[in-house]
Image (cartoon, rainbow, N blue to C red):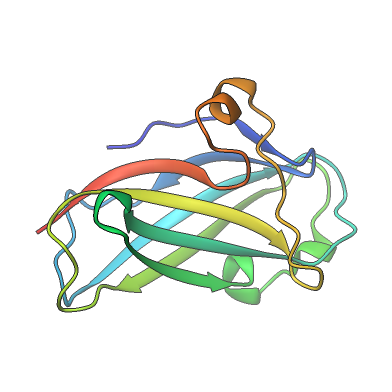
Length: 140
């Protein structure tokens, strides 16, 4: 339940899609996703990514933070025009609340922890200044 998109993040990279989207996720089980990025210029900072499953209506969120692409190619080595896939997995806690959840993404400097801003004016007006909503998925 996600579409291919093009959302610039801080002028450094663009989020371009979410692959391997399961139909739903279950409490207590592992779910896997792949996030796709396009590098907009050679990167000069070491970025980390935080991908999460959230139910803001009940104050619940679970995240997977870390180096993109399983650390195989640090962002300091990304060059302009590269497409990079970042596989993510989250094992939902057994008491994860059922219902429709939002999939979130924040890209941040690994040293300063400063997040890259979302550079899509419509999304910023909708409250997605540094945390991008990349999809929705039901938790069963």
